[in-house]
Amino acid sequence: QVQLVESGGGLLQTGGSLRLSCAASGRTFSSYHMGWFRQAPGKEREFVAVITASGPNTYYADSVKGRFTISRDNAKNTVYLQMNSLKPEDTAVYYCAAAQGASNWLYAARKFDYWGQGTQVTVSS
Image (cartoon, rainbow, N blue to C red; front, side):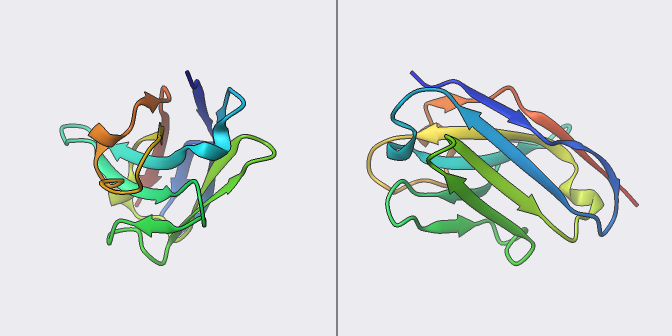
């Protein structure tokens, strides 16, 4: 069982930067692939980024590639999402998620077994 708690959301202007954090409980954090997803009002939850348990390797949605960076600190049981050059279309609730097993389908929400409560990011134009 893993519990995830996101923090770091907020309101900011276009072009700004924000770092989200996701603190995980449990002693096996390093064995989990960790992902970030987001959901805007009226839209489906979408993949943002993932960092694998081993490697680690990172993968990004095309919409955030070059602007967002995912990283993890296994000693602190924490995964981060550094977001730069933010745009109004980045406005959403951002969710942290954890998955185990093979490192495939990591862009799919159904792959992830554990989810945080979400943190709101609002980018004004």
